[in-house]
Image (cartoon, rainbow, N blue to C red; front, side, top):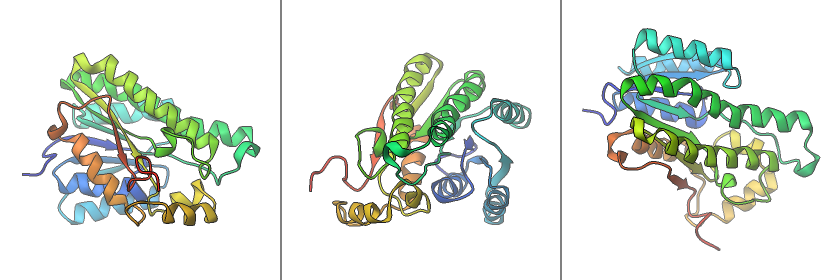
Length: 252
């Protein structure tokens, strides 16, 4: 029996990178996965790959900054499954580090997706979890949401810091409903995304400064999310899981 057997899991940003790894791992562990993204072709490909291996997954288009689209996803989940056990707010964006030269439009866009998207997902899915008798919310933040980092966009850091504190507020407000909320804080992960977050020089410096001597892989984050989604973490809420190869906790 899988660690998520028969659980209903919604994963945003599931078409590539960390989200793809999370969707595939959750399905392999027995979850019925709803993966969402705005990259429809990539998302449908992930759905096909999961089902070909005997897993259960369905792809749905979702712009996480749209309340109307979140409401539609919520109705779909209630009508098809009648409950929701896991919400993994993974979708996120960034722009190459522009320091304080970032445009107001880029700042607002990152806040819309990275922070508002997590809020809207929580707002839409908590009522379903309450009816289900509880659930696990996992929000993907970043090590940049814990401490200031020169290589990261200030707007990205601010948006991920918002996710960190919002997660704790969610955990406190809904603990009595059996709903847990925790955040994951990835360090440098080997995906296309890191190229958008940092300059090429900073990426090289980051690699040299990772105590474990390598970039993280999407699967490293997926396994952390799997633990927080499973009943193995039933006494964990309002916590931060840092997965960064030692970058945050070790000075080199």
